Length: 267
Image (cartoon, rainbow, N blue to C red):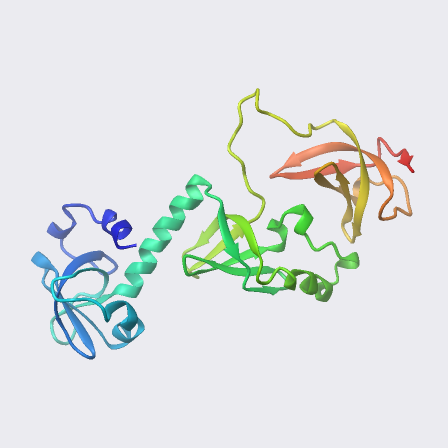
């Protein structure tokens, strides 16, 4: 982590006037039971104490005189005339920079599900709280509950607690210090010779896997798509029923189907 943090500091940063929020590098001058002092070179002497010291005590306890530390400036001139620092905030700052890189590159991450609520699954990435909304689950993990019963949805989601899922960073909420994840992995663009999979306009055979308050799910091969209510033209659909469906849209890895044009059943 320290090496990644160092990369965020340019060679001439220490020549500029220090500012609150800036991440700086210093050497340990002295250590006490309630504070640690850092030599910040041209900008002066810094101190980590009070709540900032207590919250990072485990991280600081093994430091020796002369060791380098990266910290974030939280006060330029405290009561003792020192620059007040936070190593915890510096670590978080750099962690968010790393997460921004992961989001930009589309890196696939493995996360362990720690909890669930009616809106989705709870986890963390690099120590940062993260949320995986129901809408961003893979079709096969989506809690298909009749009439959209929220209590039943929660029960289905709780089954994922303790399991590992592969996700990507969808959004970074800087103000709340939280991540929004997606399980709908966006794959890198393929060349024309590599393109495979379903095409819009294609008619496929499948089996109704679930019926919900907003439509019916149809599984065909290893894929699954949604038939919205607007694309029904027959009543009394049943789970397990074989049907022909037409692919009418593929958007954000979601497949939308129609039963209107092809409605022959297979038994």
